[in-house]
Length: 153
Image (cartoon, rainbow, N blue to C red):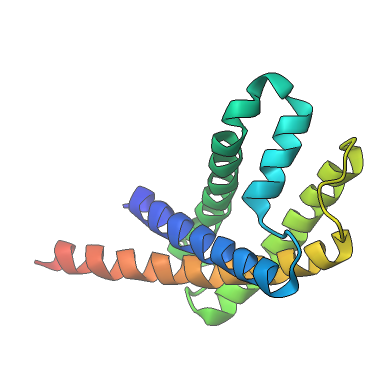
């Protein structure tokens, strides 16, 4: 059961976060699209993997989302937090700080900065992760309700 919850929370949360980043990128005419930025980083660091960079970037993006979702599901399943909007926002905010820290150091060590305005990118990341947390909670609740109904029958 946990696998289905993590899968649902991870896919729904990461997808919502990614859609948000793509929308904000369009509205602000800046590239805040995490998978595209990861693709640039991979191409620059691993020239031999250039043709596979988009696949690696998208895989990495969702793998990290599943990692966050795994932690969220454990907290919700073991009743450390209630699966509600508040906990989704809280977990997303904490994940945002973790994500910003990871991106900060990644961008700092990279020889060619693929982000034109890191400050704007970090602000977006914070809110994008809150969306991740809220939509991961929605994915968790959907699967929980479906599996609870199946188990009762």
